[in-house]
Length: 146
Image 1 (cartoon, rainbow, N blue to C red):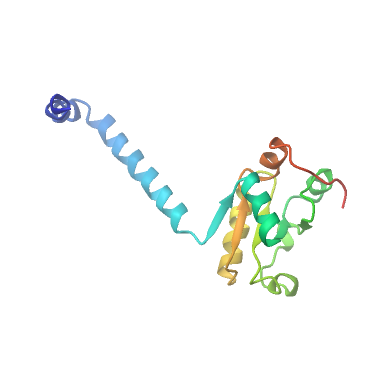
Image 2: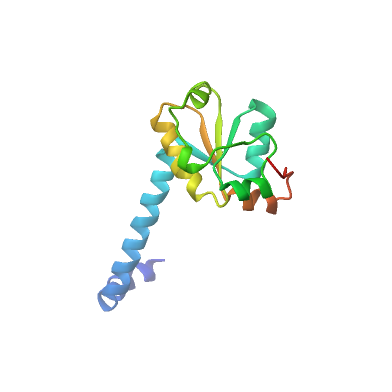
């Protein structure tokens, strides 16, 4: 270890661009992880969602396109088109104290919807990481149709 520390300044001096890239990537990784820890909504795995469903009976909001929802969705999920997703609606406002889980096909769109719920004052907001793809890959039950 001592030999490594003595050679490190010479390596950095000889490979300045590589060292700068390493520092930038390290800082980006740290910032990303801090943002994930500090945001007010959390990612759930399919197993975590199953556990939450068994313990707290959350409101499941699926924002997938209609055809994707009809091809397969989590039992009990309510379908809302992303274009019609409004955290201030009367139906959602009733659930401000309940856990709310946002689901989409891949998990990416659900993060934006979860952020909107947090801004609207919802306290327990989650999204399904990996979306319905992760749910079906875990071989969990899916309902077809409306």
